[in-house]
Length: 121
Image (cartoon, rainbow, N blue to C red; front, side):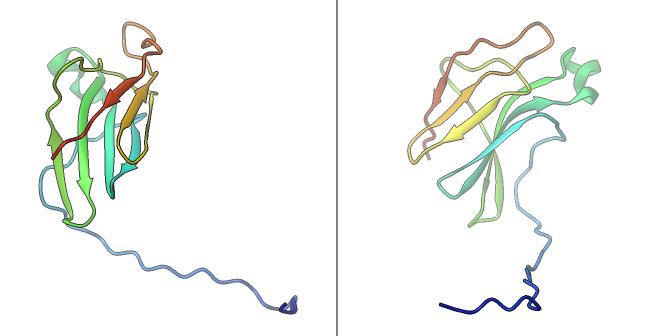
């Protein structure tokens, strides 16, 4: 075992690099949810006050994926039982699925229904 020497100060070093990803990233938002899934960043929903005059809503229900390896954004089309627009929700992922639950929109709190989102190619 090593010996602790009180005069040593721990150091943390990191390098930040601004990326210029391809594709169109999501619009500005707050109170969205994000998770990592298969080496990709998934962003869903959120709130944007600036869109209210256009769509008469501030809640978003869009799904965006940032692929880390290819440095590319993609907006994903959803089919089936599509979740309503919301903010203040959570998404979590494992190796095969993404789950979305909770949140609220201008009308109400969203039901505590779990959406099982399967992401294909």
